[in-house]
Image (cartoon, rainbow, N blue to C red):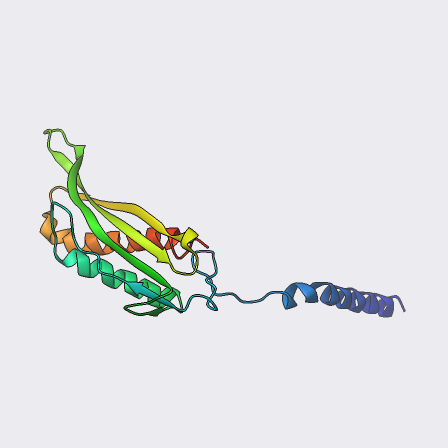
Length: 178
């Protein structure tokens, strides 16, 4: 008799738990998010991504293409926005304003043991639907590498890594700022 009561008590407790937690699960609605924020795809359907020409004193020509491809790939991968050339709901334009090398660590022989490659970009983001979201800002990222290595040996990899970081920073300040 006690075993039967215990069995019904367990079933009743499970039923009450199921009833109590059902609203929690049914109120969860999936949302498309970008860096913790949602883009309203009813308003925003397209984006134009302009060229980012190099305006820095030191020039590495492949950087422009590397950065632009990284940015376009990120938009395609992380949003449902269509990339178009003109009359978009949003636009990203800018320029590469800095590409510099600087010594970071000095060894026993008074020579640098680490060198820092820094890339700076100026980005202009325009939101046609809400001009209050417009951004005109500079972004900078860097990577250190051993001074015993020639820059030409690591330059492509460093530019790819820095471009990815810059794209993340730009997304957070523009498309992720909702």
